[in-house]
Image (cartoon, rainbow, N blue to C red; front, side):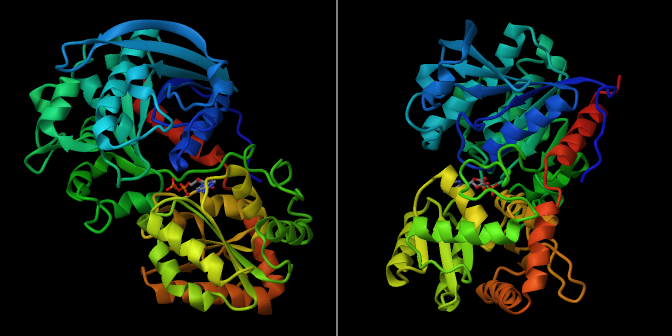
Amino acid sequence: MPEKIDYSDKPRRSIAFIGSECHPFVKTGGLGDVMYALPRVLAKQNCDVRVILPRYECIPWKYQEKMVYRGEFYMGLGETGREYYVGIMEYIHDGVVYDFIDNQEFFSGPKPYYSLVDDIPKFCYFAKAALAALNFMDWIPDIIHCHDWQAALVPVYLRTLFAGSRVGGAKTIMTIHNLRFQGIYNIPTIRYWTGLPDEAFDHNCMKQNFVDANMLKGGIAYADRITTVSGTYAGEIQTWEYGENLDAHLRYHSGRLSGIVNGIDYDMWNPAKDPAVVYPYTVKDVLKKKKKNKLALQKELGLEEDEDRFVIGLISRLTDQKGLDLVNAVVHQIMDEFTEVVVLGTGDPWYEDAFRYYEQIYKGRFSGCIQYDEARAHRIYAGVDALLVPSRFEPCGLTQLNAMHYGTVPIVRETGGLKDTVEPYNKYENWGNGFTFDRYEAGLLLDAINRAKECYFTEKEKWDDMVRRDMEKDVSWENSANQYRELYLSLTQW
Ligand code: ADP
């Protein structure tokens, strides 16, 4: 159990989180989880936190109806020659204040993101409106914590157009949750929507090659600190292989770059009190209850019901990042009569089709759930024995943390946060959290799965020890939030 720290006598700082998604309002991936969990823990660690988000039309009505009108104003935007409406709607929950920037022109429709044609103007507007809203509300934070490319213009605006305004004195942190997405578009378009001065379109700032502006690159150049969501990923992105064309820029700014690994929210992910799980459990009865949950899951998904089968789960966006080509390459070798596989995810059609196909040919042993379903995800974490995360790259990864917390053994590639959070199993010392492989090769994935199977079927006591060890591993936000708090303090020594 982590040691309890008393934060009441620690220095208090105010932080504005700016980002494009946040559970439970809108979430497409791990960013939404972080934007939810981190502010809540920071609030408990004596921080004053406000989260600024777009008020998307797709936010469920049960939250929209609880929002309170906080004010409105009009704001010029770039070279558009128009004044744009900025409404502020507020919602307070668990010590955290959520301010939603309202503008139907930008945030309508059933999804938060569309193509860059829509999203570039949307987030040029959002970043500026968020800063203008802080000035308007007269809530001037010590730190502005910006997340991913959608908020990357915030440090750039802050040090240029907002430099003389009240919010201009705040320090900024740019957190990269996934370097693959950077917000790149041609310079004239971004100049038109932002009205930023020439210096922002310099090679040291946003300019990339000869024609494009890269919003994340600008955020990295202007932020006071840059963080990413694991130490290993912070190192990897400075290499050509993982740097997504920004490796040189990141190497140049490496003195300000560090990694802090994500945690998971123990209220949202608690196998003892999870309303979605059929047989809730703790570390004391995990072995018995996991079998019951396995049977319930098999029944729910139409799989052959047998508590002794080795059931492997995969919960993921179905994209190249997640190593699904490796999975495709080894499926036929995994599917023996003692093994079942459950996939939950949506994404690229060729992967969706592949998993539907396996469900057809391995009837009763393979389940391909092509859907986004939070409750089912919880039941899968509770019911499967092992979870596959063979990612090509993984900034932090949350699924392996969820899995361990539910007593499910992760099988992961040693990259990014997977490497930092899953200690490889050592059968001689009976230690470790899961099965790992290093190079991105199908044969090595198959080998890791086979090692897991061998342990499960022939060294059950050691497997069970690992299940209990994983459940007891501290993967909470407490420790990581404390590191962010220290970072905020180091930037604001007065
Ligand atoms: P990424 O942010 O790259 O998608 P992460 O591992 O950081 O990956 O976070 C994924 C989060 O989304 C996890 O909480 C996982 O449980 C959840 N998730 C992913 N796919 C689905 C799905 N199809 N249904 C429900 N939850 C999902």
